[in-house]
Image (cartoon, rainbow, N blue to C red; front, side, top):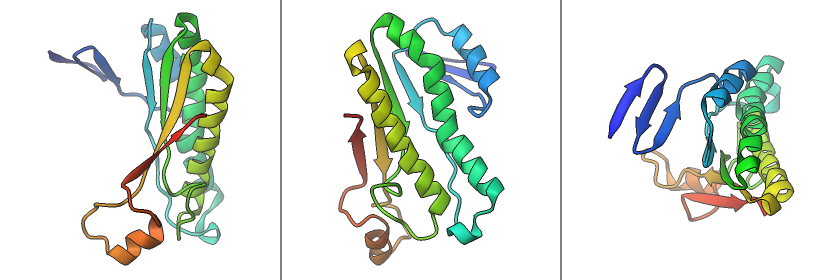
Length: 168
């Protein structure tokens, strides 16, 4: 069964909420509405195109704020609920363009996604004994139409469409 409320979609027990994940107050208000949380998916992200020389400070700040700080805020807000219930799963979206593989013209993006991998591993190591799992998914580009094989080899340097980086 599916129904829609303002800024929320409910489907078979899954709640999807719309909020600005860069705004701490919005995240905290959402947390007040949710008593129990089994899975937290941090998926919001932005791809800045360019080298370090083409990345202005505001580009860098926006990328880090949306791609990394938002995950920090979401985890910090919802982790206490998971710890209270002694279980929870946190899934962070990273990318192959990160500490896994250097990619042309993706300086800020790749740096932010490498930070997501570090955050994921830190949270996993710190809270696995309390029943919290934290992992990240690192999608690549294989199978996307319009991309040449040479481009994919240069971007990914691997054969699979994505990679899951376990927190531990």
